[in-house]
Structure formats: C-alpha cells, structure tokens
Amino acid sequence: MPIPLPTNLQLTLKNATHVTSCNNVKQKTTLESEYSKLRANHAGFPTADEPVFDTELVSKIICNLKLRKAADIDGLTGEHLLHSHPILQVIISRREMMTFAKLI
Image (cartoon, rainbow, N blue to C red; front, side):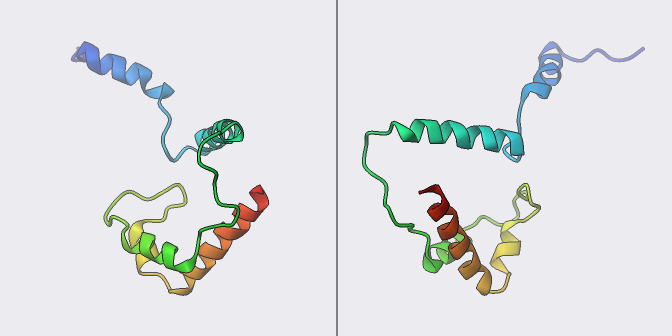
C-alpha cells in the first residue's frame, strides 16, 4: 500500500504544471511583449537614445557574476563567461548595441 502524501505536497505537485521556469522561452517572449506594451505608455524619466552597453560595462558585469550557479537556458554558467576569451566581452557589447538599434 503506497504511503499517502501530505496535503500540502499534493497541492504543490498538482500546481507544479502551472509554474513556469525563468528559463522558459515562451514565458520570456510573453514578458518581453508585456514590458514593451507598458514601456510604450511610460511617462517617467526618459531612456537614453543611445545604447549604454560598452565593453567596460559588460566586463564589470561578467566579473561580478556569482559563480557555481545554475546554467541559463543556453547552458552557460558564470564560469563560462568569466574564463572565456576577452574578445567575448567586445562581441557581447556590440551584439547588445545592435539589438538596441533594432528596437529604435
């Protein structure tokens, strides 16, 4: 005879299918579109017209990443970025600048 699960655990398992991961591509797309809709009517402090992603900023962010954490949706960890070739920081900053330019 199987051992019955506690009620709170049964509810957790029942609702687990409704929980989305932060690594869920569909959820990412949904959140991006919601943000864009909210941003269109934003009346606060204006954003910069030019991108602020430069190599120095990307380098600082990579150096401040927490290590030994779970990988992202692409399978990359902080260690991958920290120990990669320095040209990666330049590539990331240029990629972000190009992405920003497409949004304008």
